[in-house]
Amino acid sequence: MPRITPVLTLLLPALLLIQPVKAAEPATVTVRQTEHSQLLTLDGRLEAVKAATVSAQTSGRILKLYYDVNDRVPAGAALLEITSEEQGASLAAAEAEYARARALDTEAQLTLKRYQELFPKGAISRGQMDQAIANAKSASQAASAAKARIIQAKESLKYTVVSAPYAGIVTARHVEEGETVAPGQPLLSGFADDEMRVVMQLPQRFLQAAKATDKMTVILADGRSFDVTTPKVFGFSDEQSRAFQVRLPLPTNTGDLLPGSFVKVRFAIDKRQEIVLPKEALYSVNELSAVYLKRGDNFVLQQVRLGDVRDDGVTILAGLEAGDIVAANAYQLLLEQRQAK
Image (tube, rainbow, N blue to C red; front, side, top):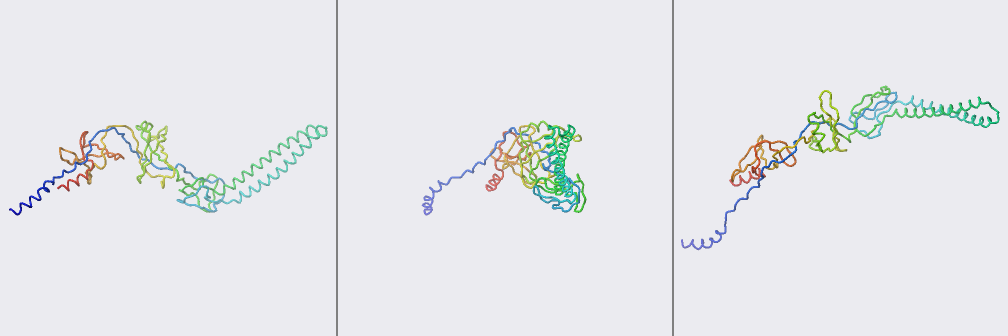
């Protein structure tokens, strides 16, 4: 005992310095009801702003098809070629007719000029003078008509090469090589992929809310979203469904968007009091969604029913009341409790 006493005397100051460390209080969130917009989510469909079917503007036989279905076509590229022998012959005939008309017009104008010099001298009669004037006007009009036929023949010759009106993708081919076509016959169909829009059917009961909203959010299947501030709500409904069509223009060059794909459209239709908690406060296991509710000095697991997931948190539909206090980070609290045990 006398040997231990000096040792205890030496350790006593150090033992007095050791104090129990109090665990840090977990961060908490006080549940409050705040006014939030009630969001409506509807299905929409992507469609191209520019989509068309090019048709034949002249008759002939298909010589060559330069593009097929699913090919990407640059603007102004030749899509197909039609035989041009008949159109070329028509152009040559029109040019010959124009040359003849010009020669006759030149002759008529010179005759009129001579008659105008001789008429005051009494060398020709009034009837001859009137005839010369009429012939000059007729020859001039005939030359103009022949020139117009040349323009028409040139355009008809241009129609033998069908070009793309804009850059895009071919969706359908209506003819084959060697097939004879006539004016108005469909040739190829396609769409421009640089400008898309969303088409949505809006039930009549949400019409006023759609007109009053300042934006609609388009959510793509890959998770991307676009805010549209200029929705176009049609002023008439469908005769069968009684729904109103809404068009939502998307930004240009948004990537590989495919017409016909389904998207989600979300917009606010009303405001109501809701409870919104940060996502970190939730504890989720399989089908269970819960929070750690503070009861006295302890935290107990409280099951909740979730609503919409938003950027600022998750809507709580049931399980909590205003004034409740929950842990701000459920998994952090669970980890601390396990370490304490």
